[in-house]
Amino acid sequence: MLTKREFYIDGAWVAPLAGRDYHVIDPSTEEPCAVISLGERADTEAAVAAAKAALPGWKAVPPAERLAYVEKIYAIYKARAEEMAQAMSLEMGAPITLARAAQTGAGAYHIKCFIEAAKKFDWIHPLGDGTPGAMIAYEPVGVVGLITPWNWPMNQVTLKVIPALLAGCTMVLKPSEEAPLSSILFAEFVDQAGVPKGVFNLVNGDGAGVGTQLSTHPDVEMISFTGSTRAGRAISKNAAETLKRVCLELGGKGANLVFADADDEAVRRGVRHMFENSGQSCNAPSRMLVERPAYEKALQIAKQTAEETRVGSPREEGDHIGPVINQSQYDKIQGLIESGIKEGATLLAGGPGRPEGLNKGYYVRPTIFADCTPDMTVMREEIFGPVLSIMPFDTEEEAMAIANDTPYGLTNYVQTQNAERANRILREFHSGMVVANGKSRGNGAPFGGVSSSGRAREGGRWGIEEFCDVKSIGGWFE
Image (cartoon, rainbow, N blue to C red; front, side):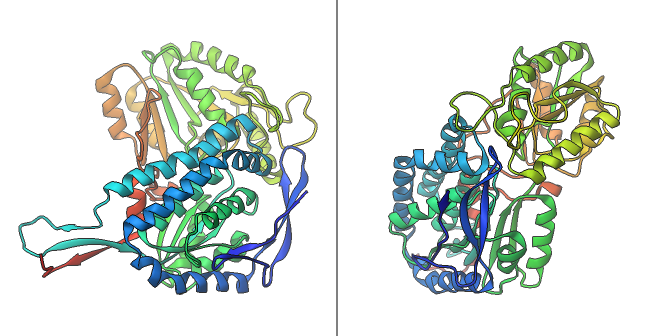
């Protein structure tokens, strides 16, 4: 079992001032795999004080030099990628093949995109209205608190830490206590890159402790949070007293509209996307709406795809799904599967309990419900597990009404070969991100939602802008 109890504060690994032991659980065995310390107020205060003291110096570092530090982090990240993959596989149960390709790969991808965006970022430029000396400048917000989740650890850490560094902010990172090992390793990368002391600080802790302390701290100018909508609301309330900027990337309940003219792989692609990372993705296409003429064939394909989806140990190579994160999440998913059965949905594949041959670990059977109705719990609540709900529709208008009838608004999907219809639906979806036919949204595209999914815009130049204040200048000397 690993023991890694230090915090990274003011450029050094330090023992907690007031921390308490916390056992990190390997979700594949239900046994402790590491011991960390959860910080308390004294640790948070020390980290914020270090960030505040480092802010004037880091703000004064030219953007090109800040970029050079990020390029060093990128090189170290790539060189130590296998360590990162092993850490995430252990802490949150990602199968090692997925951990290498997608989990670790996501971090490298975002760092690279930020480097490219920073090279083109115009930190000060003319307003452009013809007024001489009228300028716009982007300046760092200040000390920022970064609170990241367990489901895509490096995806979210890099989406916050890297643009904050580029913008000239100093920071305190609180990773999820469920999956802290990858963030501790990332702190080693930052230290190895020689980032000046106090610029980046890490304190492990839980939401009620360090999370609340950061969101209420008067010296923290901004909170960037990824996690549940419930926690996002609490952070917003906590931050209101000190008028912080709050950037929230929260839950989702994505709709995937499959029309009769969709390509042959559309249904299979949607099911596999839903099951990726054991369904633990906020942008998962968890509601599949199928045009009635294609409905029966879609159910056959979905059922076959679910039955072909293997569940196994994170230690095994290959294309399979692993466990969900913990007992609480496992129990929640089981309860929602039971609700689908009780409310009359047709259980097409999977169901309650663990997959055959897996008697230990938080493994969930890949589950598909058919013949759902919009009012069912499995169609309304974010399940955050490998559970897909499918229902038919008759008209585009009906499908759009159902798709947009949700408090969430993160990502929605459409599958059709009709270009006019696809473009119309992409505009009509009420969500921050929309995708047609499995296409990419593009390198450096912003990630974020609307409504109960929060309104962060993470990634590329938009991600850098989130950590900047815009200064309007008059009378600039040319």
